[in-house]
Length: 313
Image (cartoon, rainbow, N blue to C red; front, top):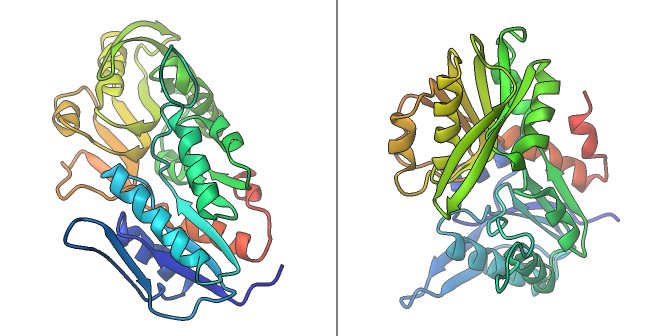
């Protein structure tokens, strides 16, 4: 279907990333008023004609998660009532993804709830990156384009010696992701066996694989409180690893995460700007931009070209 041009509409969740995407696409951000009423309700007004346009709403649902999510829903409704041609939220970080199934009694499946909210609000498709659980794509009744940050991290770690570096999954849930990175970088692969003791406490108990005398890259989709990843870093270090690097797509860094990281065995922590960076990162944290990848995907979606071909090596 041919739309009457493309428009980029930015929420307030990650304005720097939105500006970077607009620069890569060489298109201005849509003129819009996104603010709050005195009581905290979200006030939105789009200040230009977007009728029939292919609109991409740039808004990760990162902390504050509820604010970001509600703002996205209001922006979607505003576009829908402005008679746009197509609505695609660009959500490099998809919040509420931890609960993707009922793993015990009397708990919600929040990933499905958010998918339903977006669909009912009026989205036509969704663009996201490194979902906490890839099966969340199946919760939507609209197409989902699921990107991976692998190409960005591949450039960062390209200079590492593949014979002396091991990619390690910090828990069983990260095995598939870590194995993909190991294959991409032609490196060895290992797994940390983790037991969760509570919402913010984990214990690493066993290591499957050999890291002695090797450099280690710990790979995960997100760093929240940093408990899992720093505990895994401690374990591989005690098993004889040389330098330890942590690599994660979404750097949330909640609570005492930064303090944990600074006191950990890691040499470097590498994340992307999929969520709005905190004001002051320690020097050991490097941030890579996902703007070029997202911009390329947006352009491909707009002209109906393959998105998956971005990841064909």
